[in-house]
Length: 371
Image 1 (cartoon, rainbow, N blue to C red):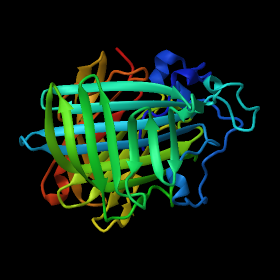
Image 2 (image 1 turned 90 degrees about the horizontal axis):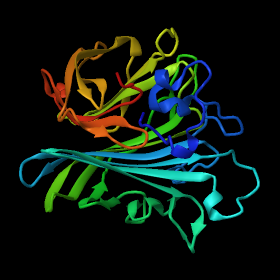
Image 3 (image 1 turned 90 degrees about the vertical axis):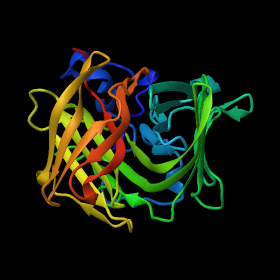
Image 4 (image 1 turned 180 degrees about the vertical axis):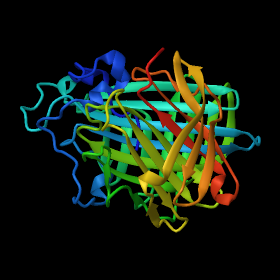
């Protein structure tokens, strides 16, 4: 799912839902706000490509989300995350803005790099619309390009793939070439991803089979890297329900060649309905196996204090339907995204008996409040 955090932009930080205060809901109350006037994600609507690579302004929230687990030419492990979020400040169909600074589409981008020594994170904002003859941020379907200033993810050929990602800030940079011969994966029910026991959710597809090559720049040095990347696309108008607090999301590259995506949505304390689990195992061919949520177990082995929050950074995940048990640990505890809407997102390692129980990936955690 994510996957994030999702397009919670400063301009969208309005009042929280009436049944939970900000101190209870954390930084993501905006995702549970009502979305009157916007289109709603629902099952039974087919995704269409290449159209759905681009923006969906009829929906309130949207993101293009890439994570990469990389090995450096120096033999060390690295990670990269780049995300473009789009959020609408008002429903479509109203009067056009008087000037570009009133454009209803607001974009936020995050860049994060994990190195053997630590983790850094950066953010940028921009309005949609044309400013001085150029659009500072946006997304187009064909040719595909998603950008905010010079942070850009774009197609480099005649089709959606291959892609190039370039972003740099304050002496840090990533420059990756991304390609795959495997198909996209429609998550959930043919691209509709349910997020609550009572229904509701998002449109969601992934490309979990990307092979990445390029460079990472940090601390005055440039390291050649290669590895595995995962691209997620989601759009919706109300990502959470009022009785949901946040989520834990796992995107794992297994040594068997399989990909595993898991998430659990956590209900607001005292709620009996907000908890929700989902999991899918994607075979090397691209075929997917949806897992029975009743057979998925998330057990927190230990927590660590990060940014004043007690976060579960060591997990044991049981997949009873598959007869597997995984241990997932953070590469570094402090992979905290210290941005306006803060969350934890970082590189994890996967261990366990058998080739389907070892690998690397990314973990994202939202909605944990300071103690």
